[in-house]
Image (cartoon, rainbow, N blue to C red; front, top):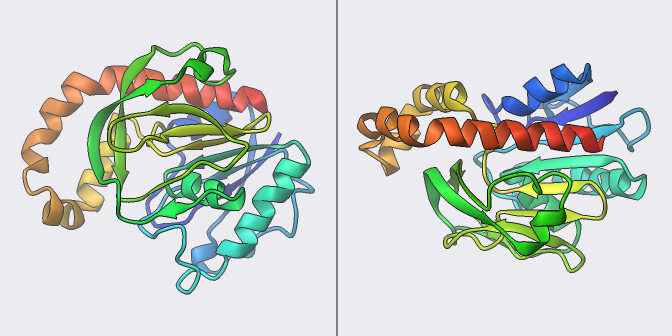
Length: 232
């Protein structure tokens, strides 16, 4: 199993998705196109693709000129019935790739927040076994309208479209299910000044919120990661 991993920003790794891929014995091909790594021309040679998050928005083609090629690559994976996972910015790019409209700056969330599954999620192979509502880590300003053929799988009162599926195994997740407690603690240190500028009390809140929400969020995130890997 060879999986292409597209990282779009510093210090935005695979987290629990990486753990699930390691369990499955996956061979990872990690590309950092924002640092000049070339993207593959098509899906040949890979069984799946993961598109990770970042601080930029999904329409920032001028600053990140590889975005259009990434959209085309996503559609090629879908056309070859190969699994794709997009997280946060990755989900916004997936929505764009299939005709959804990106909405910049209209959905601000940070910290552990609840999301609820839709009725369609009950029969979904990735989300069907999860609780109807669970906490999960969020960090985003943007959202999107769903592509015409997408199945809406989760939402909350800030972002109606928190998870969706296109076709068999193209999944977009606005929330950071890959971010377990160690990753959130790392982000809280690595991005401390950025977080403090918008959430000055975060350092004081972190341990308490993590104690309340972390165990359930980590369990839900790992379940999603393993279930998505099974689609490959």
